[in-house]
Image 1 (cartoon, helix red, strand yellow):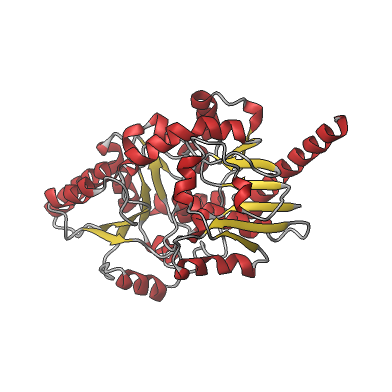
Image 2 (cartoon, rainbow, N blue to C red; image 1 turned 180 degrees about the horizontal axis):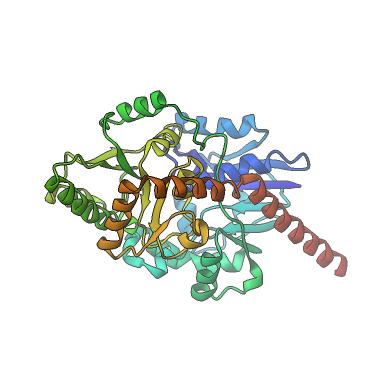
Amino acid sequence: MKIVFHGQLLNHTNKTGIAWAAHHFILELAKYPENECIIQIFSLFHKKENLKNLKVYEDAGCRIDECRWFPYALYKILWLILPIPYQMFFHSKPDITQFFDFTAPPGIKGAAVTFIHDMAYRAYPKTVSFKTRNWLRASMKRTCQHADHIITISEFSKKEIVKYLKVPDKQITVVPCAVDHTVYHPGYSKTQIQNTKEKYGIDIDREYFLYLGTIEPRKNLEQLICAYAKLVQIYEKQKEKVPLLVLAGGRGWNCRQIYEKAKALQLHHQVYFTGYIEQKDSPALMCGALAFVFPSVYEGFGMPPLEAMACGTSVIVSNTSSLPEVIKNAGILVNPTSKKEIYEAMKKVLEDTAFRRELEIRARKRAQTFTWQKSADKLMKVYKTLLAKQSESWLEL
């Protein structure tokens, strides 16, 4: 089976959730002996050092098919106006063309499959940048028309897509994200954890609560900071040292108010903003955390909490969107609008060691049910079904 992957997301050094999911799916699908995998990318105006990010896929057996003469940013706008075929920019003639970023332009060779990860731009429009929101509003109807099949990452997201885009249920398949258990596991030493903390300027002698993800409004970090401020207040009254709050991740859209909130509450000595964390460092940070706190108001899946669970770390997550589906009873679920619930969950994990240990066991067990191989198998079934339907259509002709 010849599979083409739209690889624009892969060409970024600082990958975030969607790009990491694409990365793992491609590497897993490249392991199937029957697959010929090709990554297509618009490389005009891309820095040479960024193109080195594609070497990992070449090493896995993928071929790179570049369009060096036309910019992707321009094509993204043009295909909304004119039916310019995507395949005119590339040489490959695939059985399947897979997109990962809510996209399915016109003129795709083979069956067109796209990932739609969530409906945040419709459900919580104020948490999505104006530019992204407008582009998705303009493109999603056409994407659904061009795609032969849609993949999403949770049952929650499937219901949201049906609700907002009116796509037939049978045209959507849930293929969950997963965890790389060779990277995310509890086996990181105290020295590795301390070295990682030191690298990002975190006090090596202090315990800490950890959030890891983009610093942006949708992640509800202002509410987390306020809940943490209450914990600081209580512990300072008792003259006890409170664990730090480490907010790890790159700056996202409209993030200034999050930094200002920590400053306004005079928490600059207790709240650490690390900036973007290299993927190789995130497991050690997760292993060392007292708990992983993820109070996001809306998620299509929620990979960071699952990765923390694979590291054997207790998690506190929102009781909304996809998170209850992913976490189930392996973590503490809180109302993301309630500072009180977030504070009480953090206090419980901090003070009740036996409870925390029980959560860590449950977290590890739950995380082990998610593997990229299982998810790739589900995706392969979708591809085979699409090809079988195409063969039937050709026979009828």
